[in-house]
Image 1: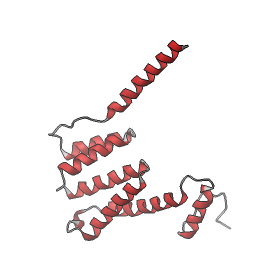
Image 2: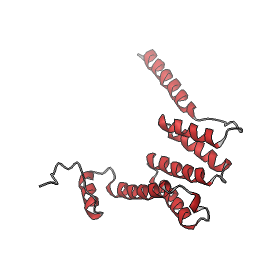
Image 3: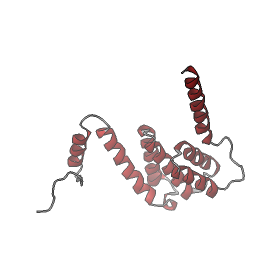
Image 4: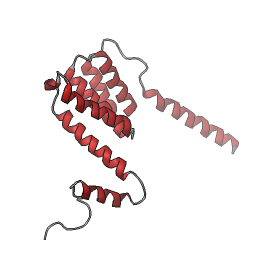
Length: 161
């Protein structure tokens, strides 16, 4: 039995070691912004959020003058933090994006969709903070919807008469 437990422990240690090895240690300095974005999107598709976040951070450091893609990278960074349930960091990022749309001299160069998505994301964060994963979360979600003029579509109640 002890031998079985030892083998099992070694097996899980190896799996843990290789599962953490997906984060890149270095990035080719000749990679373009497009390659960084492509790798970040592939990491997102594979639900490897930390790696995607890493690629977006590298993009923001290397290519801050690319205003259109920088705002996209900032949005994706905040969205990843939201998905990682780091709501305070995500909220700060989304607010920073909205501030850039309001105050930056380059705001006319930013794609409008990231402003809209940031506003929606802030509403979702506020809702998540209010509703949370607490007991009776559904009742809190219904109350949220009523207070914000939203309609829950899966309540089972018919809205047509």
